[in-house]
Image (tube, rainbow, N blue to C red):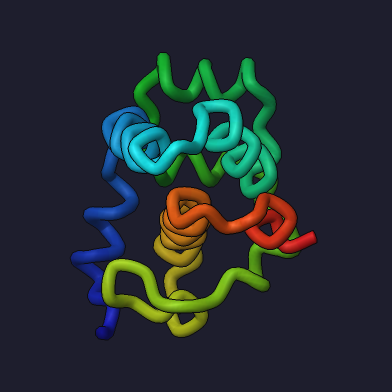
Length: 120
């Protein structure tokens, strides 16, 4: 699938706090924990617990969420298909970063070992 400019704009304007409960529900349904989800988010974004909580409370968009993040340099090792898109072929940086998190949450929910998820 090809990512369109409209799709990129829609992703940028999505509120992180509105997607977060879906991430949490997905991992908890599969026996993983909120702490593990936060570990994955922290690894990808560089945010600590306080910063993550503040972003959720401030109801920031994904655009703001990633503008203020320090994305892990190993994030480029995240490859594969998520939501019908091949991550490594996404041109828009923000959309690719959002899909990185989607992929990590998916791997967590599927029971993958944390060392593999965090590309260590």
